[in-house]
Amino acid sequence: MTAPILILGTGLAGYNLAREIRKLDKTTPIVLVSRDAAPFYAKPMLSNALAGGKTAQSLVMKSAEKMAEELDARILAHRQVQAIDPAARRVTLDGGESLDYRDLVLALGADPIRLPLTGDAAADVLSVNDLDDFARFSARLEGVKHIAILGAGLIGCEFANDLLARGIAPTVLDPAPWPLGRLLPEAAGAFFRARLEAAGATFRLGVAASTVNKGASGYRLELNDGSLLDTDLVLSAVGLRARTSLAASAGLAVNRGVVVNRQLASSDPHIFAVGDCAEVEGLSLPFVMPIMQQVRALAKTLGGTPTDVSYPPMPVLVKTPAIPTVVAPPAPGQAGEWTIETTEDGLEALFKATDASLKGFALLGSATARKQALTPQLPAQL
Image (tube, rainbow, N blue to C red):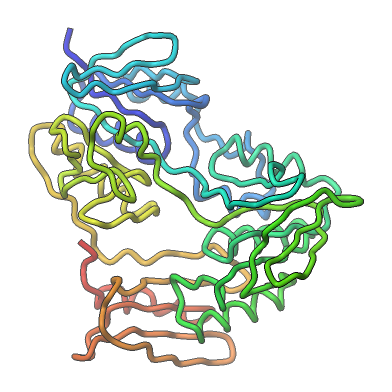
């Protein structure tokens, strides 16, 4: 029997890779392994599901059984991978079962970064990184009036806006001086903050939570400036860390993610990585568009046509209806400067190099209408 293409992970990367493979190859066996129930859903929907009245169940588009039928694949749900043996091309699962593979693809995703919080309720801090997390989080919202969100990055701000739709007041804490600090220049960050605060959010910037204790009716946070904040729930959204331990244990090269080349191959020629766990030529981009570029290229490579992944300009949509925002940050270390134009209902920030070429932008409010005109002017990301 032909050894299968084995995909570890059934998120957007794993499932979309299987779909792309099947477009090109109807016969090679495909096996997917998932540590959860392996439903197909769009993870980006988790941070704006409340406004749409969505539940964890209604976010599921297709069950594992339906996906297995659609992909003509074997899907192993609720299984943990114990080890990878690259020399034998074999993966060991919990219970001692082993799976041989022709090629192995790591689509393992990333875990929420856990802050080093102290206090008797530090373990009660929630995070939302998958469907099961969202189910736990939404089950806790009954009667909640206030939530403290740790982190004013993309996910923290999206959740803040989404909670407003449920009548829940969020306070967003971050050591950075303005929200979306890795994506927006200061003026744009201030504009973004003002609009989200006008909608009902509160920002506490330049501070961080250090201790979480149980309070009289909820939780009491001690901040590093000595102040206190009482809240009903605490949600952590301080970022993600790629799941690399399995790859590292197998002797693969890892850095911020599993290190892969432009053909998504790791330091072992029969092991590949895609999605949030992959670091492609130094780039770790946890967004849908890069994932789709990766899986289309890798499906061709696995089908016998070696194909480099390329990243065209890929602006990121921030799901904050209170202040629509689209960002295309300049590459790290890019020389140049921001120019800002503000109107009553929008802000356009353009990052230009010394030769006046456009290297990045941030468009807020009415300025988001300029996305299609500006995007073709940007350089490819890879």
